[in-house]
Amino acid sequence: MNDPRRSRFRDAQEDRREADRTPDTPQTRAPAYRLAFADEDFLCRDALRPVRLQLELLKPELMMTEAGVESTIVLFGGARIPEPSEKHTARTETLAELSRFYDEARNFARLMTEESNKSGGRENVVVTGGGPGVMEAGNRGAEEAGGKSIGLNIVLPHEQAPNQYVTPELCFNFHYFAIRKMHFLMRAKAICVFPGGFGTMDELFEALTLIQTGRMDRVPFLLFGRDFWQRIVNWEALADAGTIAAQDLDLFRFVETAEEALEIIHNWAPAPPRDEIPGRQKTDPAQAAERE
Image (tube, rainbow, N blue to C red):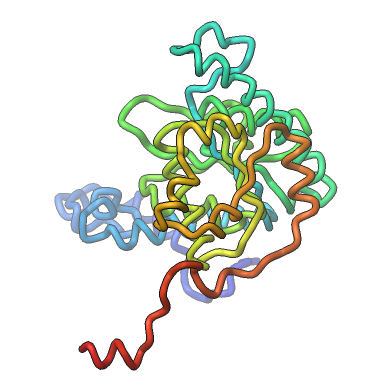
């Protein structure tokens, strides 16, 4: 038999099928008899949380690698922002005005995916949260360019389904927010943040913190909509207060259009991670030892 596996041991899938054909007895019906890796109740135990975390990290990683995805362009943004033709359905006047960013995200993703297609869809693949609003616009633009895109959904208490434009074989679902965030950034060549709410700001500040603290390479970090972001966050006040350094304000750029964002990405000189945090006093190991 031509077995593509390296292992000479019996195949797990084959054993699982064989176990399903086991004679029906009180012993074989008992939960204890189920194969551990095929026992959903067992895998959902609290004690198995470390295993579930590993599985959520591993499954998308393997599938993206198998699909040939080497780098991504991250699009964060609000789920409530409608496309311009539907802005009359917006809950507030501000959301209706922000609908223009649906088209900017759609156009940006289309242009970026046209470039990605030149690499066979390996480089600069658009990745979104897979939901509606700006996320939908990103996946939609990629589909219109004839390319693939990634959707990283997460289970929420209310009903939610991936938007129809995510490439099906790259549409993932998560239980753990932390692992989902890792997959957003592990292959990121640029991070583009459109107007949004708590979820968008959570993603924005987590990614920005990783870059600020040197835990991640510097990449183009683009905030679409200067007026929105300067109204929502008083960036200069943070620097004036000293809670961030003035140099931290250089970690991101404001942009208004897809073309402006592309120009910054194209002209970006690769930058290594920071080796120090501006404005943060370094700890002297000798002094620290003396204090102990």
